[in-house]
Structures are given as structure tokens and as C-alpha cells.
Length: 347
Image (tube, rainbow, N blue to C red; front, side):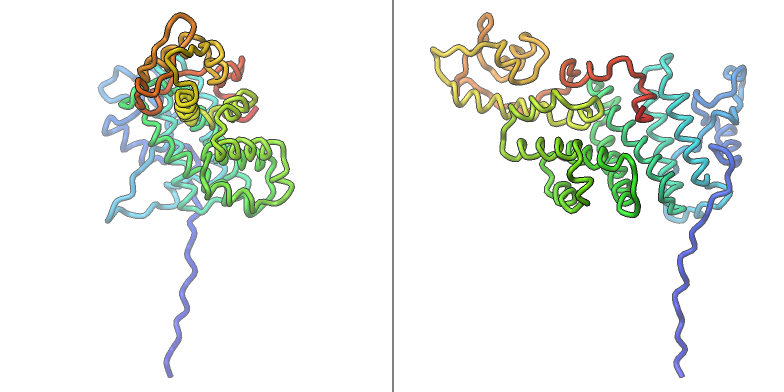
């Protein structure tokens, strides 16, 4: 008689590491002089072999590799320690102003990636996972704006985007298994960030009524509809009423709105004898000043004279959306006096 073997259920490891970094990694990185300056024990920086501060060192991301030993329980941080680690990064590292903030970003980026790695191995889900992912998303979304003017060699928005999408994917999956206070806010942020995405919209339309009918979701649906209809004036007007976090989520689309709108204006008002007021154009484009609007027009080879622009089809050059820059009216002013840490915590 043929014997039947039943597949054994997957064994899910539960971490036992009590600190933000396993002892073995701390000793190894200290020995190899791979401690980040944020992790060095005060008074040992100039030593031949600087010491790690056990209260400040955080486990770094480890890239999976073929033949590499699987993580052991003592190397994995349990859910409560992962949340404690995220709070430490937000409260102690994010506010640092002694170094360029892009250096702070790089460090927090790597350590949050390590947190998600430990979460994935242990299949952490539920309230703690949701809290970690929500705070991570606020960090990545805000960073995409705070660092928007940095060169690509310093800050790569595409790499940041990969991690935004990963966090959204994990977070929305967790939302499907429970009821969470901030779900409507983050479901709306997913639509705003992925404006025009059929997949994002289809997901949103299948959500429960109490989520779909929330103010945040109605706003996001309205923005998505205006974008789908090519009504970029409405998109920019609605962008003015968004919160700071929502504005950071929509920020990557703003240049695209303006680019499309300028093409429409150039087609509709093309005439050698027609002069369009730059002040009105700046208002419609949601730009901070007349000089900003003039610079945009000149970049597309349009003639600017005094306080007006001459649209002409024969002169217009389509160079695509321009470089990213700070937006005082549409984004920056909405941060107000709030600190980076308080925004990332969702206070």
C-alpha cells in the first residue's frame, strides 16, 4: 500500500533579539570598522577601533545571497523591538541637523529596510505591522519632497518610489485583515501617489463603503477623475487644498500637470498678436511667482515680454516635465511649524 506523506507546515521563526542590533552583527561591524557615525560610542570616535554604542546601533539591511545561512532567532528582532527601533529612528535620527539631511535619509532608509526584512521573515502582521508601515510611508513620501532638489547621485527618487510601493503593498494587505483607524487616509494616499493607475483605482472601488465614502477618499477620487479627464487646471486647484502629506504624495505629478496644461494653452492661444498675462498663467499653474511661470515658458522656447507670454505652435519645444523643485504654495507652506518627526509619527 502506498504511503501518503503530508507536507509539513512552514515554520515561522519568532525573533529573540532584545536590542535594535544583534550582538554578533555589532561585534562584527565594530571589528571591520563598519560602524555608522550615528552608532559610535561617544569618546571613541578617534580611537583606532571605535566602539559601538549598544543604545544607538541599529541592525543594517542584509542583502539576500545564494548560499547564505538563513537568519537565526537570536538575529531577528521581535515585533515589539522592531516598533521600538522605528520610534528610535524617527525620534533620534530624523531630527538631526548637524549633518546634511540626505545623510540622515540614507541611514534611516537602510534601517527601515532592515526592519521590513525582519518583519517579512517572521511574517509579522496586525497592529504593530500597520503602525510600522504607516510611519515608514510617511517618511518615504515626505522625503521624496524634502530631497526633491538633490541631484540624482545623492537622492534617487526612483529607488525611493520602489520602497513606497512596497510599503503600500504590505500595508494594504494588512488592512484587508482588520479594522484600522488610519485606513481611509492611507488608501487615499495610495490613489494620490499612483494617480491614473487603473490597478490602484480598481482596488479602491472594492473597499467597504465606510472607507470609500470618507472625506479623504472622496478627495482622492475627485483628483483621479480630474486627471483622467485631462482637467489639469482642476488638478492644480485641488492640489492647493490638500494636506502636507497628501501634497507630498501628489508632488511627483505636479510638473506633469503643468507640462500638459502648457501644451494645451500653447495650442489654444497660438497667435503672433496674442499676449497671455503671466500672472494669470502662474495662478492657473499653481506656481509661486511670475518669474517661475516666465522661466517655464522660456524653457519651452516661448517668447516672454514683460508680464506676458506669446504662445506659438511653431516656436514651442516639448522637452517634457522639468526638473523637480520646491513648491512653496502647493506643498512647503502646509508643513507649517511641524517638525519632521511629528509629521512622520502622524501627529
